[in-house]
Image 1: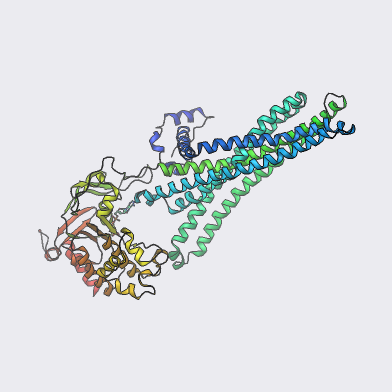
Image 2 (image 1 turned 90 degrees about the horizontal axis):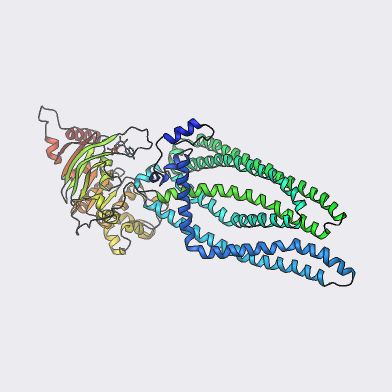
Length: 639
Ligand SMILES: Nc1ncnc2c1ncn2[C@@H]1O[C@H](COP(=O)(O)OP(=O)(O)OP(=O)(O)O)[C@@H](O)[C@H]1O
């Protein structure tokens, strides 16, 4: 964890400077999200990263933004006319009326009305234009973030929880939306008002402006107090809301486990506590806002009262006209009011800056399994020969201090094209890890995994995904029809091809019995189907995709015995022309394998044909082979 540079403590600052500073490259990604505080140098990179993203979003709208800025300047100009015209009406118009001349007062009134009307029309134009630019930018950003999340590899999603993904796509995008929609025009008008009106006040009456000047330190003090305090309160708010979202999403993702183990009350208590933290953090920031706004109003009121008294004396001694004093007081209001807008903007800006930092982190996250810069073509047709060449592998560490745990110390394995291999071994032996490396969900830290002799790191992702497909025990189905779920990997497949695939693996009968056959909606996560039926659909999907290499990870574990037999039969057809790796605890699956590999602590300890291994005795004595022992245990469990 990096720590903030302590400017009040030179030793700490020196230590921080001496400690290894993360290279610019380290800040390209989501790592900083796990860092409670960020070093000065890290902060620079984060801001640069946010700026890059903002620049990329703004670029297509530069002209429109320039036009919008000109519009808001003109609008502010029109809105500033009114107090001056009031002074003209009072000082010039009223005396003229006494002499029967209505022209000056009518002109002043018309000017006030006309400038208000024009100002309003132009503001309407500005708001629609700014709204459109903002929404276009958000649309582009939302699209980029979604695409990036989809493209980031499994390794990223294993550590980046779905709660955080949802938070990026909702909370953070909303924060930017708020800034763009409500606060940006407030900021431009406020800054313009403060600068232009400050100058106007000094020009109208330099003496009275001394009073305004005296108030400025009080205003500045209030602003500093509020921005500092609200920054802390805001950070607490963000942390609290993130914890709420994570708890919410995890509870709902695991709703079955929650209800089965009667965790509702405990989870409700945890959620209530997190929710209370959020409410407290919110209350703190509301309290600060509650003091800040009346503070600004009070300073403004004191300044106005003082100007009224001193200005009154000037009016009486004839050095200031009543109309100008009125205009001065009206301008003063316009000078103090924007301070509140600035505070509102600052609050929105903090949310938006934090959001932008996180979103830019996601967008700059480099996949741990990057696309090759010079990809090699996979010769067609893909044969499906798999080679593990001295593969050493450990999972990426979740934090820097975690010790490295080697899962595969140095795997050598050759699976010839077309072979069906069963992988067995105790839980935690590394079977799924081997399968994940074959799909290139991860890269080895040493050695290489090859498909038809080509290192997977040199293959384009789409070529690899076409050649190697994994069916896991999750069998994820998406809401939509059975047919669409089967054609998931080959969207162009016809209805006939979908049905053929279903028939081949023996799923046609149950699908035909569904109320709307292949068009039946399987509902969320395939909830309308049984676990076994979901597996059959997943098999049909894999069969239709027709990969050269098929990996089945525990894929038949949730089938009952008759369904399993059905699938076993289908499997023989499916696996006939392709390379297959089957990870199975149920050794019935092994019967269809040409070869069995037994894994233990990341090593292959036995390798041979199933029958040969069952009947083999270890060379040194009369103990059965590990596979024979596993097979025996499995047979006994069946009895
Ligand atoms: N994403 C991960 N991050 C870190 N370690 C992991 C990860 N997945 C698995 N491991 C570790 O790697 C080792 C091998 O796990 P793997 O899932 O490959 O075993 P397996 O043989 O498939 O077990 P099972 O039969 O229970 O599925 C285990 O010790 C596990 O704790």
